[in-house]
Length: 154
Image 1 (cartoon, rainbow, N blue to C red):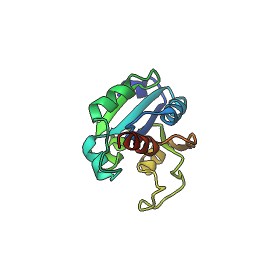
Image 2: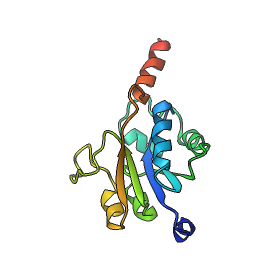
Image 3: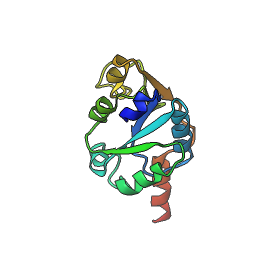
Image 4: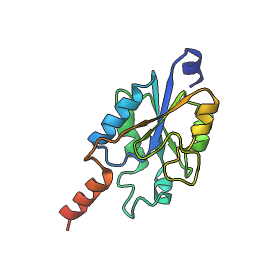
């Protein structure tokens, strides 16, 4: 990480569960990666996914499987699994140039209790970086895929 910074690389960071990778994820991740020269994904550990209350069956894939799939993408430079409830400590440690989240977040939201608040935004901005939001690709969702799988198995 420090060698990337010393070489002037623009480090982009995003985080999430990335449980059942779909076309929406690929579009989002590739667009995020294009915002810099190095792309790091913070991946929620299985324990932190449970704490997010995404549903009783989540995560569907374990953290190792999810990390391997993400790391195999040609535009991903690193995947870091984190077990905290938020990626705040990881963002502080990495201090990326660009912090990216999906369309359900607001880069201007200042209230941490608001669902649209982007964790780590103050850290990134105070270090001269920027916060970006990439709109969702309509029609793609892990929740929708999960429901289809459950219906097929009834």
